[in-house]
Image 1: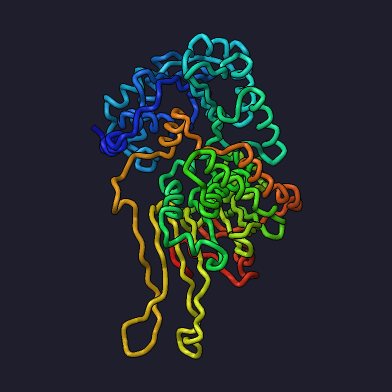
Image 2 (image 1 turned 120 degrees about the horizontal axis):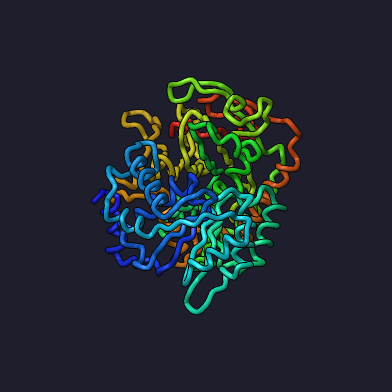
Amino acid sequence: MAEPTTALKDTAACGTQPAPPCTLVIFGAGGDLTKRLLMPSLYNLAGAGLLAEGFSILGIDHNDGTDESLRDNLTQTLEAFSKDPTSEFHADHIDPKSWGFIRDRLHYLKGDFEKPETYAAVKQRVTGSAVFYCAVAARFFGTIVDGLGQAGLLKQEGDGFRRVVIEKPFGSDLESARALNARILKQGDENQFYRIDHFLGKETVQSIMAFRFANGLLEPVWRREYIDSIQITAAETVGVEERGGFYEPTGALRDMVPNHMFQLLCMVAMEPPNSFDAEAVRTEKAKLAEAVKPIPPEDAVRGQYTAGTSEGRDVPAYRDEPHVAKDSVTETYIALKLNIENWRWAGVPFYVRTGKRMTGRRTEIAVLFKPAPFKMFEDTPTADLAPTVMRIQIDPDHGVSTEFNVKVPGPQMAIGRVRSGFRYKDFFADRPNVGYETLLYDCMTGDATLFQRADNIEAGWAAVDPLLKGWPQGEVTFYPAGSAGPKEADALLARDGRHWLGLDGETD
């Protein structure tokens, strides 16, 4: 059996029960999301013994196909991923028992998402509990939920459940997000809709709550009296490449900030919930998002990459990528200064940046503590002390590191910089995870902790809406591919007497 499956079995052995029997109905069964993320995740869950014998999958797409053609296609794709070191799926071979469990339960239905007869056909084939997964373009979200509701597929009877998973982007601004929420909630209750954010499927993101709230050492200093500022970074070395058709009308702000970046913000800054009950956690996250002051245009920098060198090879400018306009002003980089108006964080700036084609790949939250009063070091070579910095590393490193000052051994007072910390892989078995295993399992078991509620979604859009409306038409700065971003982003922090931490993991 493949190593990932063995590792996941530790979870089942520790008392985690299989999800209740249900049918997973995937709209967009022929799409990239289904192939690249959903099927590997289901394979891992099957290997861990976390899917019930009564589990089944119904894939729906507009192309001709049969059960066997779907099974063969997905088998070939999974085998290809197992041989591709760059894919999220890490397995040296496919375990026939684990994949056989999924393959035998795969069924196909050709259907048009906009036609009522598709939903009538689904109703004939789905009985009992079901999860409907919208692995489709955002323009179909409302259409599919309408179709399910009007066909009676969202009615819940007895102990059975009917749930809908909706991918991002959930809206393109505050108005459209509110409209989509209002539309889907006409067809069912809030507890039936699971707005998914795959960032929350990452183990290291989920661990932030445990790191903060399970350690009495941290909570007393996790506030404005002790913290100078917080930097949240999600930097990528890859470019837009073949996704220009999606990215052109979207951009870095819509693609990353109201969802991924705000989820990291909520995790690191929310108040302790009364319990880890889903609604208690989501309420605190919503309260934090609502406390973010609307961002004025002067507290934001938009950048777009030009031609440059990335990871040792020449790469084209964004405007030269496929399906991108030659005069595009879509941003591939965004840097923001956020202010949170509550008792804990008043006066503490949160700096957020995310971009493509940057000098390094790094997702982390860096907490910069206020400097100690150091009068004793005046008029010495060590007068300028660097701040204590705690980095919560999410990707590609998984762990926590802290940089602080110590005395260098010797007869004179000299201060040196040291780092301590841990890596998750040094303490815990590596588990197979493409980012969706926990999310799929939680949806099937009815745990909504890691999914966004309507008020959380709308609060995120409310904070960035002034930017969307206030940016001058055509205003975008530029940065060469393979760099740390535009110089204007450096100026955003420099005006506050601060600077970005290096993307190489160094403080300077």
